[in-house]
Image 1 (tube, helix red, strand yellow):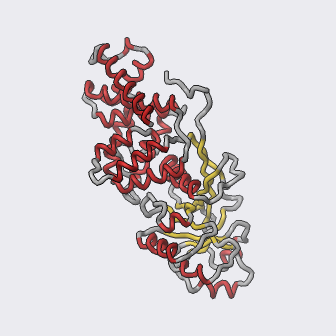
Image 2 (cartoon, rainbow, N blue to C red):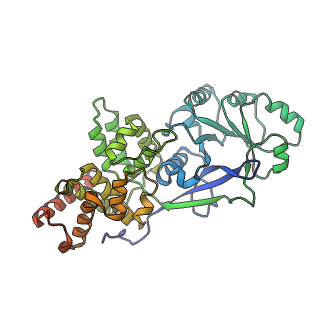
Image 3 (spheres, rainbow, N blue to C red):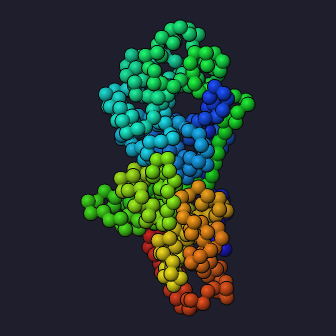
Length: 405
C-alpha cells in the first residue's frame, strides 16, 4: 500500500470560485471564475499576477473547464501583465473571455496588447467598477466583447453612449435590478435565487519545485531542443505531467483530443505552448512543492512501470503515464476514476487504470503488487531478480532526480 504524507495530513487544496451569469430567460450561460484563498470564499486574493496565474492554471489544467462550467462559457480575470504579453496566455481562443476587472493603466503598450489578443481571436471583457470612465479608456471598448457595469438611472444618456459600441454585450453588475437592466439592453445578469448560487469548488493541489520548472523552461529555450528531451523533463514533474495532459485535450479549439502518452501530449501541444504553460505554472506555484516523500512514491511507481513495460509488450511511454496517474491518485486519496475522468486519455489507458485491463493493466498490477510484497500473484513473465533490478533502477532514478531538484 502506498504511504500517505509522512505527517498524515491531507494534501493542500486549491479553490476556484464560480459566479454564475444568466441570460434574459434566467438560464445560466456563463461563469465568472475567481481564485479563492479559502474554501469558504470569504476572501478573494488581490489581483496580482501570481494569483491570476494560479487561477488560469487551476481552471484549465487541474480542474478542466468541462468539470468547472460544463457547456457554459466563462470569464477569467487577467491583469495588465497578460494584456501586454509580459505573462503569456497559454490556452487557445475559445470558450474563455479574458476579463480586465481591476484598475490598470491603459497606455500604448496595453492597448497594443489588447489589439493583438483580439486579432488572435480572444474575446476581451472589462469590468467598469463604478460605471464611470475617462476618455483614455474608450479606445479599449472598440476591442472588447463584454462590459460589466452598474445599471444607471439615466436611461436615455446611457443608450446614446453605448450605441457607439454595437459589438459589446453588457453584463449587469451585482445588485442591479434585472428588469431595469434588460430594459436598457443588458444581456447577462448575476444569477438570482432561482439559479445556482455562487460557490467555491476545491480539489487537492498538485505542484512541484520551481527549480525543476526553471530547468524545463531552460531546456525548452535551447536552439537544439529535442522532443524526447522535453518529454523526459516533463515526466520528472508529476504536476506538470498531469496539467499538460489536461491542456492537450484542449489543444485544438472546440475539440477533445485523446492521447496515449505524455510524449504524444507534448507533440500535440508544441514546444511554444508548453513553455507558456510551464512559465505560468512557475509563477502560480511560487515556492510550494509536492511533498518529497509523495513525489518519490509517484515517480518511483511511474519509472518502475516504464522499466517493466518491455516484458509485457507494453509501450514504455504509456506505462510511465499509467504509473504516474495511479500513484497520484493514491497519494491524493482520490479514486483513480475521478482523477482521470477529465483527462484526454485513450481507452487503453483508462481501461488499464480503472479496470486493470490489457498489457498496461498487467504492468500496473505487477508494479503495485510487488510494492506491496504480494509476489505470489505476479505474472510469471519476470523472474524475481528482474523485478528487484527494475525496482532498484526506479528507486535510484527517483532519488537522483529528487536530489538534483
